[in-house]
Structures are given as structure tokens and as C-alpha cells.
Amino acid sequence: MKNKSALGVIFLTTFLDLLGFGLIIPILPTFAEDLGASEMQIGFIAAIYALMNFSFSPFWGRMSDRHGRRPIILISILVTAIAYLIFSQTETLLILIISRVFSGIGSANIGAAQAYIGDISEPQDRAKSMGILGAAFGLGFVFGPPIGGFLKADFGIEILGFVVAGLSFMNFIVAYFFLPESLKEKNKNAKRTNIITGIISQLKKPEISKLFFINLLFISAFSMMQVTAVLLWSDHSFFDEKQIGFVFMFIGTSSALVQGLLVGPIAKRFGEKQMLTIGMTLLAIGLFAMPFFQAELFIPWELIAIGLIALANGFINPALMSLITKMAKPNELGQLTGLYQSFGSIGRVLGPAVGGAIYGISYYLPYIIGPILLVVGLVISKRVKMPIPSNAVSKETT
Image 1 (cartoon, rainbow, N blue to C red):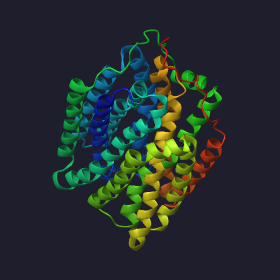
Image 2 (cartoon, helix red, strand yellow):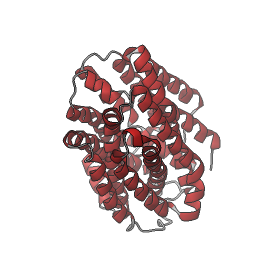
Image 3 (cartoon, one colour):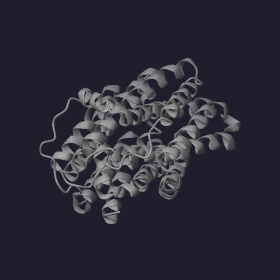
Image 4 (tube, rainbow, N blue to C red):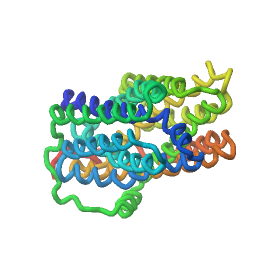
């Protein structure tokens, strides 16, 4: 690890960003429902957020290669703050959609954050560092959902929006004063690449294309669960917003513990490929079990299924992020991670849209289709060539 203090700051800024996101998760589907949205429209609203991620991840990544990681992270945090100020004034579905558009644009900075971690981490430490970044995501889900459910239930949507916007401004202040630049040599010649053209060029590279498609399948399956789980627990276990918030808190706690404590040792012992295989298997099992353990079966069986999902997520994300960052040149790392996130965002578009639609047909369907996608991803993961060639990532300047 080159710079532990910088990793700590990016951890904190990511945590504050995801805390704001986590506050919204348990209330968004039911809030949209209160505004008159159907199941399909709820999926569409979730998909809009992902569509903005798709469109802007390569942009933020390329800009971070050209101008440095720090300014891009700062600008994107401000966009997120504006999004939640708009959200605080939501009284119609149109305003909700506008707020999710800006929120999706701001949160598309994850590629730049991953590139930052790649800048300050040696290749052998990459999985561990990505696990720490993932723990920040997990902790955001630990504290965000129960607070979000509490604020919405007791104070209303306006106060909730102001709290999330305030956290984003706090995030900006922390990053402005304490986040150093990580990119030693900026790539002023980074080309403005069309998203589709950029993705196609990466898909022509066999190992990168496999990781792109595994991530797409993983995110599609996982986001089906995210958008329908709130409805599932509300409709069939009769949970209110506060209780749903605590369930997401359980998911976040489990995921944060896995990524913060277990990923480093497991990656060191088994390697990223085996960690990825274990994660995909556990996620398929956990998702398939979810709809069968509602109401009186929720404790302990649904919690066990959710625990498997959290454990799997803690393995899959760091493994994929570590592998993809090992395949880029240092001055193109932001662009590759941006395109990787953008391609994955297709899953955040398809997953909620398809999940919301088929949930209306049968609440079992998202939890059958999701595991099928993961089995396909598992087959592809077996064909990822390991080890990654040593010249795939080098520390020399170009």
C-alpha cells in the first residue's frame, strides 16, 4: 500500500456518499407508489438512475485521466448534493425522476474512485484495497436504510432530502481538504470516446470482455433483488419502512464485515478467481431462497438467505474490481474502470425494469431469473484465464 492515509480519506468520502444513497433505498419504492407509480414505473425510476450511471461513468473516468481524480470526485459530489436538494421538494413523479437523473450522474464517479484506489495500491494489494472500498459501501447500507426509514416515517420526505443533501456537502468538505491527488502524470491526450465505441473496443479483448459480462449478469441479478425486495417484504412479510430499513442494515453490516475483514486474507490464499466463483454460487443460492421464507419463516431462514447474499456481494465486487484494474495502463485506468462501470450499469437498467415488470406477474420470478443469470456468469468465470499477465498493468510511466 503506497498511501494508507489517502485510502482512509477515499474510504470516508465513499462512506458518506453511500450513506446518503442508503438513506433513500428503503423508502424509494413505497414513496414512488404513494405518488401513483405502478410496479413497472417503480422499476423505470430505478432504471433511470442506472441509465445516468451508464452515460456518465466513462465521462468521469476519462476526465479523471485528463484532469486528475480529485477534481472529478469533488464535482460529482456536488452534483449529488444538488440531486438530493431536488429530491427534498418531490411532490410529483416528474420531480422524483429529475432528482434520480442528477443523482445517477453524480454517483457515476465510482470508476474514478476505483481508479484512485488503483493509483495508490500495488497490484498484489489491489483486492484487499477494493475490499476496503467495498466495506465503505457496506457501512453506508448499515447506517443509511434504518435512518432513512426513520426520517421518512417521522419527519417526511423534505427533511430526509435535506439530511442527505447535507451529508453530500459534508462529503465535499472532507474531500476538498483531505483528499490528495493520486494521479502522478495526467493523460491530457485521453481521447473522447463514444460510450458504445469504447465498450465495443474493450469487448474485443477476451479477458476484459469476460469480466464485463460477469459484472453485467451479477448486477442484473442483484438489482432485481434490490428493487423488488422492499415490495416482497412489505407485501408478504408485512414489514413497514422502519423494519425494512433494519433488514438492509443487516445486509450492510454483513457485507461490510466480509469486505473489511475477510476479502484480504481470502484473496491472498485463494486468489480473485476462486473468490469470484464462491461469491457467484452463494448469491444464486441466496436469491433463489428469498421468496420462500416470508412472514413467520423470515426469522431465521430469510435472514440466512440474506446473509448469503451479503457474503456473496462481499466477495464478488472486490474480486471483479481487482481483476479489471490489473488490466489497464496507469494513465488509462480511469477510462477502463469508467467503461466497466458503464457496461455494468446496463444491468442496473435491465435488472430493475425487468424485475419490477415480472414481480407484477409473480413475486417468485425475479428470484428465479436472477439465479439463472448467475449460473451463466459462473460458467464464464470458469473461463477467465489466471493469472493475469504480469504486463497487463505496469507501474512505469508512459
